Length: 182
Image 1 (cartoon, helix red, strand yellow):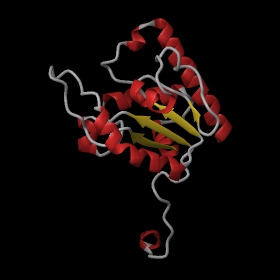
Image 2: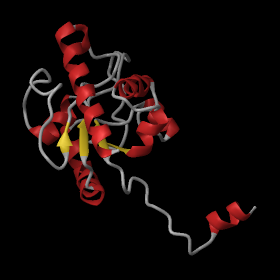
Image 3: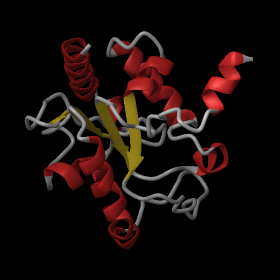
Image 4: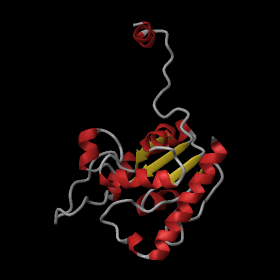
């Protein structure tokens, strides 16, 4: 009972969500599962992302999500593609409309590591370039950027063994940064 009273006491200082996060992961937009759950990367792509983060040395998906603030280029679900086999890419106007939110999060959080996920997020932070020239490398100082491909099952990029090796190198970089920041 004391614990409940302590948590609800008006003088208790609450840490704002994301404050102190060492990692900032930026995806492209929520999908239909995220729209319902109100939790980023909670669908199939999120489960794959969680598996990647276990490979990067996080003890659990919960640990990864505890130390990582997850944001998106566009804040609302862009809809399904015409074939119903996947989500639409966020349109440039939608990304531009939401850019001020992401910029404010970057200023407020000042993350040590930024993980842009997918081509759209990578281009937002690093400019034009191929996934092959970006994934598996780190860029910048503060934040250090470690690009990842999108974990969507729709992506065929990881079918190439060389690209799987690039992903492994990127996850090893995240692991090194995680240990350094621990």
